[in-house]
Image (tube, each protein chain N blue to C red):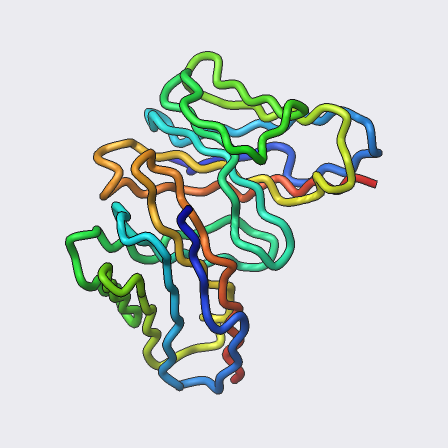
Length: 111
Length: 116
């Protein structure tokens, strides 16, 4: 059974700092890995999708990497801003398309 | 294209009552997913449809839960005889279903259910 774990559960950093969020999964037979952002009480917004054959994806200040063999992904946020404060979720896609999520990392960026 | 919409956004009900939620996916999206999210946790898969066919159901979907997508467009999720443990955010997502490796799911704002 696929299990997804995110570390840390919560993170507080000063504005401008670079940071890394971690995600690990137990079964390397994934189709892709996605990172989502969730604001309090809201739905999820897709940030980056890394296909199983890819190593990384970049969007603006965000960079996500994938190492299937070790079952790990990282989300790197450069020059963090208060507007980045949210919960970040990683999810792997099964062969049926359903997403299996980690429990999320809640990020607070202090001005 | 206005994105995925869900109705209602909030529902408060008493234990034992039935509730029904609606999800309108992005038009022409073939796949529709339901997830449930409790406080402090990531979403958990409940079920999904490809067009009008319900292709997979989680063990979380007890016999009190039923989902439909009668014409392959909007979907409803009904919970009968609600229990306090059903209190959660219910999220709907849709996707175009290319190959699953590149398929991005677009999420609605969710319906927050509180069972008193």
